[in-house]
Image (cartoon, rainbow, N blue to C red; front, side, top):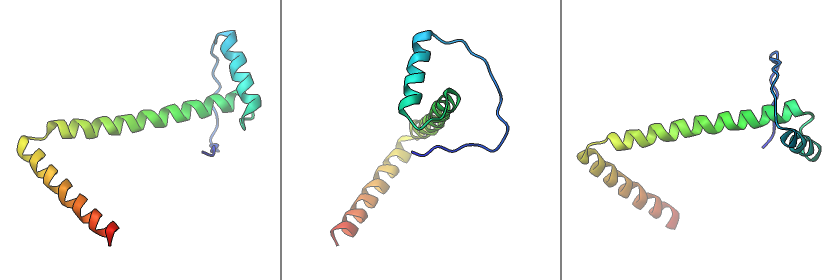
Length: 93
């Protein structure tokens, strides 16, 4: 996956990390396409944030299905069956 950089101003932060972790970060920077610790950490945090958004959507979908009444669940199963049969006919020709 390619990296993107933002044209907006960056916020400078300071953090304290375990020295072994910093060495691992530095080793990874040397072995990767990241130009710096900052870019590597920004990429990692961006990926983490994207994963959190995906999990949030997945949780919302799960909560939606949990909230369905039995009748709504039955109707959903029927629509799923119809869609699967239609897809099968399309793929088999």
